[in-house]
Image (cartoon, rainbow over all chains, first blue to last red; front, side, top):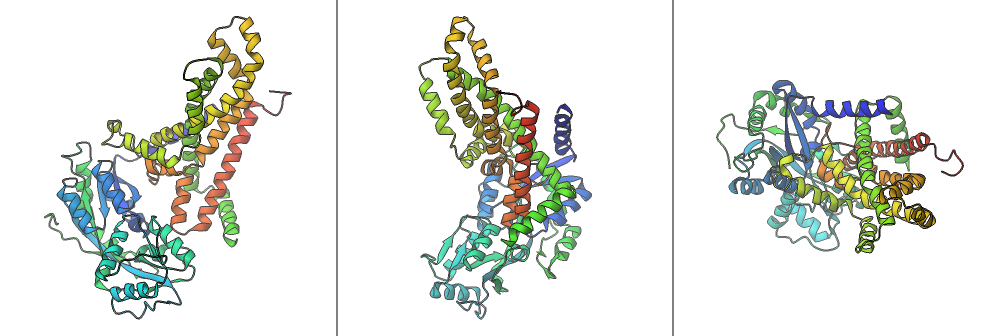
Length: 271
Length: 234
């Protein structure tokens, strides 16, 4: 018994003290579910000797963790919320890194005929008109905010028994959609990585409105003196480097490129 | 239904191949919940004994509140511990958020009322048996507590194991205060939630079966170590 406890204790110590530098970064579920983090994190550890610990949460919670100084940086995709985050002084600046895109998923028989829609707004209007079941993230995440802005742009107020706001992450929402055989707005990466597709299929994509910009925001050290701002800057330098560009553009899932690197090399803060 | 068989076979392969990641998160689960168990028992058992032998003004209230707190929703505990340990919270300077320590704290809060309530019930019954004898022997309060705790050890073991069961199967609180960080705070239950979110039901179920097996193994080994169900009564 004593030896067992000792083994546990040594395991605990080695687990927390393995890397020289560690920082915490809050990222969105969609970024993590894409599998890209499993490519980037080992490369970061190798190049910078920096262990980045990921907190995988929705954009709303990620911003909140940044505001309270519980993480050193965040990587999210909701431009207006990010700009508000910087404007209120919680973050030092916003640096665009890459984008992927949103897609409309739905039952393969496609009762609302989304597949033949010209634009994503047409697609949403026909879903609303036919009152086909739709699952919404409903969790204040970047994807949820995007969905709401699209409904507003399509001049629809999504309400009624056909509209199901589940208040859950991307994977859980996809599980619900799969169970209900409903339409859902998802990022492409989460969809391709999702293991329980059931009768769902990718019905609509490619509208430029659906592009999804990811940005990196270091938490402001003037507000939270303890945050590892130096490490966050080091990480930002790496994320906009050619090495990151190669890894991001080269990442393929099911033969498809998921992310497009679009960081600008000069360090002038954007937004 | 096919998912369950897939899950079982996944669990089987993960275990017999000593999958490194599985070993790590399983050990972390054990470490967090066993630490919580030891700390919570150290608080709850003496508290339960004290409630049994001492008569004080707020005794009924304390017992009622402990009983009510048995049903404490873990998510709420998680949220409260998060707010307290957050960098902008009162204990933020300790930097404990998103560490296994924070998870232990949350689990201790969740299981102390459960262990104390169940233990108090057992100790109260024993106390009514021992009361006259112990009073006539003029023992001190401390000796009463010690006698009760020792003689009721088997019932107390059940109380503690119930607490352990609740701790190791808990996900709501440790997800919030631990953050499910890979290699740092990921444990079996949060890994199951993660894999479910990815739609990887077979792997999630596999981890679930490992968790169930682990809970059984811990219970059996504690019974074996304490030699219960072997001797006549205790």
